[in-house]
Amino acid sequence: MRILAVDPGERFIGLAISDPTGTIANPVGVIRHRSRKEDAEAIARLAAEKGAAVIVIGQATAANGEATTLQARRAANLAAAVSAISPAKVVLWDETHSTQKAAEAWRSMRVSRRRKKRIDAIAATVILQDYLDAHPSTKPIQHLA
Image (tube, rainbow, N blue to C red; front, side, top):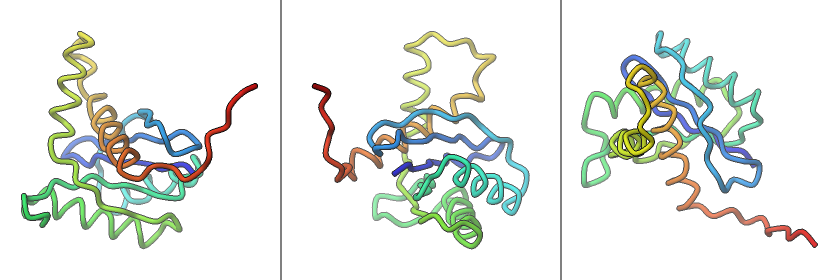
């Protein structure tokens, strides 16, 4: 089962997809933020194209788990908009520090600043891998003989 992750930002929305076993996260790319409706449509369309049964939307939360910031409320509103038009299950997932983790990885790879918008896709990958690690696949691993 594939899972699509979304890192909603003010200018760009990072996207990542799992492998078919739901074990490994891979960056897909970014889309430019337009409006909630257009963003939700683009996310739902990509989920359908990639065969994602679950869409994980990153949401920054406070220590008590509540959405308190404007960005967190925007993520919740985006999740509701995607859920209204997609048959995929939509899940909000704590994405606190995902951008910082992505930036650290980016710096360690010594990637130029010109490619900075792609950091949103890396942040989505961090969110997705965190989600996948917390929800291990129930499929048995096939060993090659």
